[in-house]
Length: 534
Image (cartoon, rainbow, N blue to C red):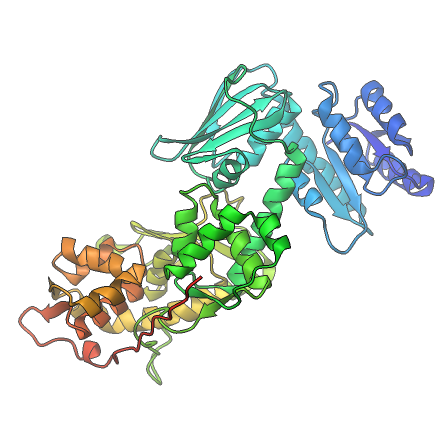
């Protein structure tokens, strides 16, 4: 990249150093220390990128950015911020998603030039849409945040329609002169719809220029809504650390809610979450239901985290999953291929991003098509044949004599994995070891469903995942079909089936042989359903 750079910094000595670096690299640069002068210089000098400090007298870097985006002649200029604090504010994280960038002080010149290169490339992509009143594309190549950058930097007025991979409309975003003013996503509107659409990284978008007939639903600026989205995403990661497995129940520990929490969260949202906890729905169920009833999954995650931080909620240990853990046998062969386990740990340590393809000679036709997607060392998606998510990861772990091939590349895909690499390896080792032993006999079992007693029906109703597995048992007559159809992992499905077999709701029979001894070794778990009234 070669071009024009405007430097906005209160310290003239730092400004001179930056100008020297830029000049040596072939850039043309100008330096200003005043916010009003920076705005004027941006119009006259027309820089390709602005380097701005965040802390300035009178007009700081954030205020300058806001003014730049409000003027059509400067809206397309990206900004690289210089930040000196230890904690990065959500405003900066949000701006990075919106096409700008930041680097922390003290910084090296290489880091500065990498940031300049990145924002210039992103701005060039956005400017390519300036004269186009209609266009469309793939969300795997152009993210939701890229679309916001395109609209903002080109002062676009019009509507983006978002469709999923089945070409079904899932939502829209309407812009007025580059500012997001309304959004829809199924039953959600406004901010909540925007946060819900953030989950879509697969599918298509199309843009049509023109004023929207709908009313303005979003009062936040683009910067503010991106900052809030970053905060919600960070809170989602914190909750995953607190509740790594979402198939658990929560219980209300304190009944008096602080007034400031009610004001911050909103009484309606708070009551909705507490009502579902009272009905003994799992964390996974709460997040799924909220996503269809006026609150995005990200906002629901934030509410749960705040309630836990306030000491109102705790994880209920009993009744989270029926059955006892099935541990590997002493002296058994390691359930997970050692090369795959080492690769997981190495990717986490180095923070790599890309796609790991796994080939195995155990599948039909000689190979099984499978892959793991990593983002900054974290597994975010997996497939194994037709299965997706955690279920696919554990099937990959069950493979032996695998060949691994890794391709570093950006990963833009719908996230299906919430767990850390350590959690996946720990759970996956148990699952892989169990099914290496069981799958030959397991798949031969037929299933007969019996009418449950009142007590049995009550237990099943209060464990949604077990109720789901029972519904599959009504549809299919073999364990093979039930396990294949289930959205839960193989071992989760197996544990619910063995539990229902033990209490007499279903009967598992092996064709021509006695029931597998492994079924008989699982103890009947104790389930206590606490009476948590509001």
